[in-house]
Structures are given as C-alpha cells and as structure tokens.
Length: 486
Image (cartoon, rainbow, N blue to C red; front, side, top):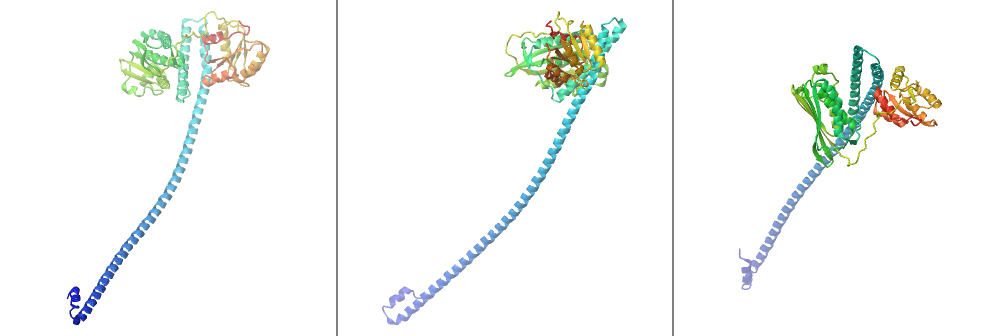
C-alpha cells in the first residue's frame, strides 16, 4: 500500500493519479469504519463486562440481602427464644423466691416455736426448781444431823447443776438465734478475773489443784465490755480447766496482744495440767453438746455446751477461741478480743446490795404468787430474813385489793397468774393514788431478757428470776426503801 502522504504528493504531478487518491480516501474511510467497529466491539465488550459486573454485584447484593434476611430471622428466633427463656427464668425465680419466702416463714415459725417452747419449758422447770432449791436451803438452816445435812447438801448441789444446764441451753439458744445483745460499759478486767478466780479457788483446792490468775502490767485498768458475758467466759474456761484437772495447776492470764486505733486487743489464756484432749476430739470440741468422748461425760458430767457457748461469745465479741492440747499433758485455751478503753475518769464504786447493817426486818411485804409451794417457800424465806409483816395474795386482782386497803413497802410479784397476771397488776397498781407507791420486784420463773424488759416497762423496780436464793432475796430487799422512809 502506497502511503497516503506520497499519493497526495503525486497528485500535483499527474492527473492520472486522481483515482488513486480516491482509493486512498476509501481506504481511509474503511479504516475509520473498521476502527469504529473495533471501538464498538470494545464498547460492547466493555458493556458486557459492565453488565456481568453489575450482575455479579446484583447477585452479591441479593446474597447479602438473603443473608441479612436469614440473620434477621435467626435474630428474631433468638429473640423469641430469649423472651421465652426470660419468661421461664422469671417464672423460676418467682417460684424460687416464693419457695424461699415459704422456707423463711417456716424457719421463723420454727424459731418462734422454739423460743416459745424454751420459754415455756424454762418456766415450767424453774418453778419446781425454785421450790426444791429454796426449801432445801431453808431445810439446811434447821437442826440436822450430819447424815441429813449431807443429803440436803447433795440436793442443793444437784439442783444447782440442773439449773446450770438449763441456763446453758437458754444462753446457747439466744446466741444461736442472734438474740443476745452485748453491753458496752466500763469494766475493770483485773478485778473481774480476780473475782472469778476467787470464786473457783475453793473448788480447785478441794481437788488439790493450785489455781492462780495473773494480769500483765500493761492491761488497761478499764475497758468497754459486757461484764456479765466476760465473767461467763472466764467462769466456763477456768471452771472447765479445774473440772478436768486431777492434780497440778490451772493458770489464767490476761495480757495485751496489740494496740490498734480502735482500742486494745486483749489475749486471755487458761492453761491446765489436766487430762488433755485427743486430736480427733479437738476437731469437734466447740460443737454444741459435744465432749471429748462418751467416757468424759460419764466421768466428769456436763452438757457439752460450755465451750460452744464460750466460742460463740468470743465470736460475738469479735474474736476467736482456740485450743492446744496433748493427752495426758494438759490444755491451753486462748482467746483474743478487741475492746475500747474509756476516757480516764474517777470511777465511783457502784453501791452493792447486801451491805452489812442494812435492815430488812421492818419491811411490809406483799407476796403475790398463784403457786402454793412458791408462797410457802417465800414465806419461809421472809421469816428466815426476820420479816414478820408479810401478806400473801394468789392473784393480781387480790393483790390490788390488798394494796388499796393497807400500805406495803415491797410487792414481790409473780408474772404468770390466772385472772390477772403480774404485768397487768403492776400497771393497775401504779394507777392507784397511794400516799407512797411500793417498790415492785418481779419474782418469776420467766427468766428471758424480754421478760425482764416487760416487767420494767410495766413499772416494776426489780427483777428476780427463780430459783431465788435467800441471799438474792435479801439483796433485792435491801435495795428497797420502805414507805415510811426507814
């Protein structure tokens, strides 16, 4: 093919080449057409590729939409399942809550029934124990030969043993039910420990056992604690040590373990050279009604509640009771309690009932009790104390009639009586316009703290839980001023 530029040049030299020029033009047009066709093919191919791409994208979008729809359906199904599960769980939780509420109500009902039973059984046991111990005490003051005196002493000893068991059961029940409230008053720990040691020393010496108590010099003179429960802890631990020691020594010590911002941590120890405790028995030693072995209870007696009570008391005080022991060598019981120390101040000695010289013989006493044995005992106790002016009433109503007719300095009031109990009788007595109201002292076999509080709330001035000894009655009467001011 002749290049187009050459042909164009030759056109200027010869007219015969004009046809050639025309042919070149046709070639050019064909080339352009071919180029257009190629461009069209390319465009078609591009459009086809674009259509294919768009189709792929459409299919991908459709697949995505399908997957989204599937996931939406799955989520809806899961949501429905979760709703059903939530409803089921709510139903189960509601049922469980109702079951727990029912169980709680049953436990509360059982606890109340237990409390009512303990209150009833305590009252019913204390009433005859009051007669046994009180009348045996009066009997011991009458002329008896040696054999009779021994019998009476044994009656009193076994009666006090039974009373101690009753008190332990009641204490354990109150602590276990978290009904025991600790006081926080100023206590002299040295004096308290010395008093307990003096109380138990005669028992130790009777066995040939040396009992000693020692307080470290840094122990504070005063601490904030519950003196009754702290004394009970020492009595149980030292008394237990004396009980299980045939020979040797029982040593009680009190020291400062550490000082804290809250106060001072005291460590108490009771060490003995007694029979000791096996490793197996140590694991259950602080469980209620548990003793080292069955022969222990036969040999030494006891309910197995003393150490359980001690452990619970120490826990209530925020500490822990522990023990180390070796059979045939002895035992060491230790406890730590953190107590606060009151600000230094002069402590006036509290007046103690029973001071020498206090005269009760001039008191005019009214005894109110529906039990004839209790009236017999109380009359005998009042006579033993030299009180000649004593009257008796068998009900609260009868007592109110007597109080309205004649003056009395002291009314010894039972709580549980027919017709009108001691609480109601006291309330009504306080409403009578008398020249001088008598001092009312509850003398009852209802020995719980709530019983004492109920008596005080009704207007009583004192509380004696049966059995009542001569000494306890004398102390209560010595704290009672007579209506005449004597």
